[in-house]
Image (cartoon, rainbow, N blue to C red):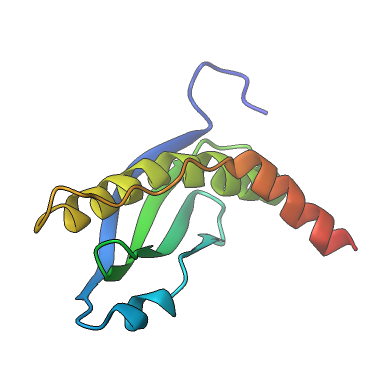
Length: 138
């Protein structure tokens, strides 16, 4: 894959696309909302750059709060990778690099008005990628 010591995928930074935070007045409102995570990625045509987009919906039923956050990470690849290698790096490594920022944002936002913060679970992006590949082949 990469013959020199340079990392095949460099994290160039991220931006917050949006943050939505809701403090529900009615307890039943928050119970109908479900937590979710959606991860997507895109490659430039020349395979030099990539994006990972993560959107998370979070719920804390104890506090009657919910929210939705979307962030986009930007990446640069070393030369010489093919499309499949680049996709795999983004889906596994790129998503794993970006997720801690998303987890931190959720914790900070949910803890601003009370000390009972919401914490997103740890995720294994390698297993998720392999599972998505199985689904595509079926």
